[in-house]
Image (cartoon, rainbow, N blue to C red; front, side, top):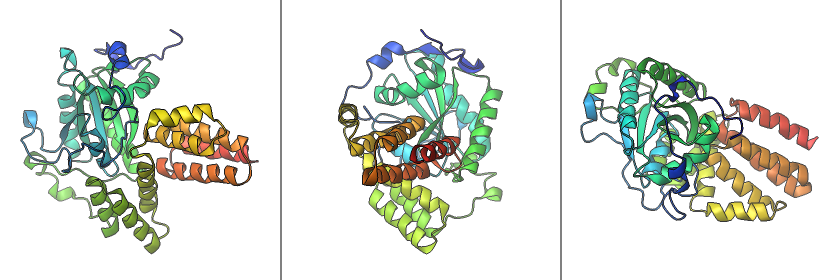
Length: 344
């Protein structure tokens, strides 16, 4: 194997899952061929918000802090990361040493008083989730292994660590994730049960603006059209509303990619490099799946290869994807520089 990245110290306990990854989720299975963010309101997803407080949480954890997901419920939980950062733990019930990591991460997250929630996915029983993250895992950690842990900020995966690190390292990583979320304007909190309420009363977050709350509620129930309308109203009232601008760009991305055949779209783009619409569609899928740099590079290359109205169409779409990712992201800064070089 060519130069494999050296995993960080937390890689102890990781298990090679390459064989499982090759056999995961055939096309047509929920989540197959889609990026990690999936699509809100996907067929088969439950109507109630996944992971809401209900049954008592395990091991004394606050209710609502730890959310178990499956292939069918994953996309709905991802919607919640638009306003509340999350930590995704991918583990396997087929490997005993990986069992319990999500609970340990949740225990470390409990002190953050709802600023982050933890998503637990057993890849043994939910292979489509593993397939969705397969490329991201290999890129981040050098091989397809479990357990691996990602941050989730507005549907975008942020590699945190592979394997099973000490509890103190988990706590430090979670602090850094929350800091990154705040820097990107993701400041919502998850509603916790009684165990998490004692200290929350003195540190309650202010209510969201009504139209932003309306958009969040629409996303939670899978109504993307209503969410887009709420964001548009917010921007009409205040064109400088950054949260509304970012939210609208992300909802539009979800609308464009909802229900499309990812394999067919990628095949069309590969067969017709000059097809601007095909290149744009693949770039949307890449951003949705967390492959942001790939999406930017694809469209910048398309800008170089086109002219006139087609070039302007690609440029405009790339600017919208910059808004989806966020102007403070380093990849956006680099992308803007590369776009200027391609144009001039």
